[in-house]
Image 1 (cartoon, one colour):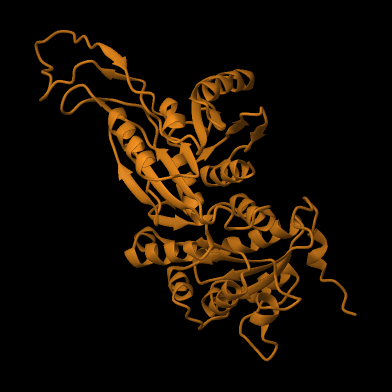
Image 2 (cartoon, one colour; image 1 turned 90 degrees about the vertical axis):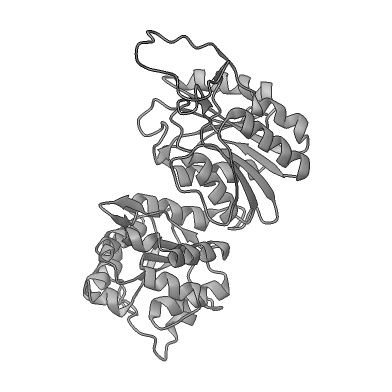
Length: 417
């Protein structure tokens, strides 16, 4: 019997979260492959067994010997008579629990989306998709490539098949892979989902997102700093989980998800009208009200531009805007409603007290609240920490995570009820 490879002595040294899990780590020809060794070691430290697979392009960037050392297994560089893709991704007792493609190039993304098998990585992907093995794909490429229409369509197609696609970090003109901890968290989500990967299959979900604006005159507005990233993350996660999603969006400073029906609005009145129409014409299983609707609007909006020279001070009378959230229960009595609440400089006790009061006023089933003044949790950030409170008083904490992870956590929490 062969002795265990010395490098496997790190397995489980940080946690047993992935104990007993076999993960195929597939590497493509991106320079981000340099980070794959550290990723493999991190997964092992949390208990996973790693099966490395490399394309020829990946093997040209880092030595297969390095990956052998890192994982304790010789990487699969070609398919042989051992039919490695069937052994680890097919309908066998030795199949892996998850296929992680990190990094994934635009070339490989396109091939997988079109069912092309000309590298070990793409053949593993085809086999895993056919077998229903969860797949996490981590794109890495130059920014213009990531935004190429074909690449966007290919990623959307893979998402529609249940593939988890991690959003890259846009830095220095490149779509870079997220940090190792972010990838680890996504792996854990895919491996430990109590509902499976399509836990919202067949549901219809309405999501409001973005900020509203109220016009002082034809060019100036009153608004807030919401980017719409949290609502966009919720809509994308719901679509990936199998739901048919409609998004009513105010002003946003983020890319809105693919394969989601989007209704654009600007003012609170416009968003209220869009919500009312949707709930009158369509039945929704769940409503997630993540939009940052402004509380005030000018009593009078001036046509044209208010002069700025020689006029002295300007006095504006503000009146309340429509409370969209408070109308939703009457407009859609059978829908599950999740509200959002943002407060600055609030301790947890105040957050909970205020959130419960707002949830009860709206007759919502859940409310997600956060302190927008906390570092990394405010408007326009890519991270967040939500306290999710249910009508029965149960409180769940997402912890400090990416907004994508917070969205998945929220959806799985509300899907439990």
